[in-house]
Length: 114
Length: 115
Image 1 (tube, rainbow over the protein chains, first blue to last red):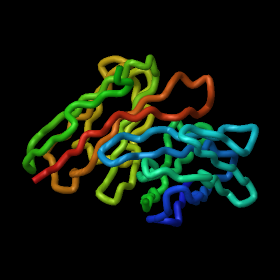
Image 2: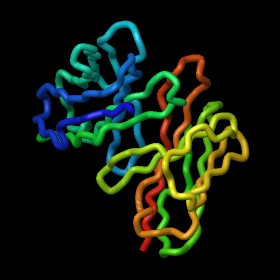
Image 3: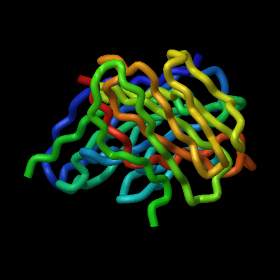
Image 4: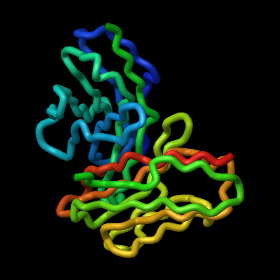
């Protein structure tokens, strides 16, 4: 069965600093990979997704992620964090024949210091 | 225009009661889901419907019964509520599967508290 690991439960960065959130997945074939963001009391908003093709994908709000098959990783990055980026970030994986089911990681809570 | 809307947003109820959460999407999607987010923020799929047909039923107590009257609606009925049912329940939908897997669009969630 597929699984997703987000090793960092909490991350604190200063506003303007760069950010990298880690995500590792376990799945035998090529997965479909997603990053979602959840602001307090809100639903989940899709930041970006990877299905195939270019392994560096651009998303909304200045985020990008890179798929590295050799490392089974799909890390999320942003060159300069804004205070409004403080939220919970979830990595998720889907797979062929999965009925569009997404398996989520446990999330990383991002705090931004002003 | 809200794409995926759930009602109510908050629900506080006593143990043993029966309650329903409603979900509607106006995106024209074929597939709808219920996910449960526990107190540790862990998200897990419960059910998935495609064109009103159940296609995913994870290991969920049979006190939980989804119902899809049409492909734009997926309601969740919960019988005999227990303390452990307290969680945030998210409805979501996905567009038609020209692709083998697509992203899910989520509602705002329903925070259920059982006392």
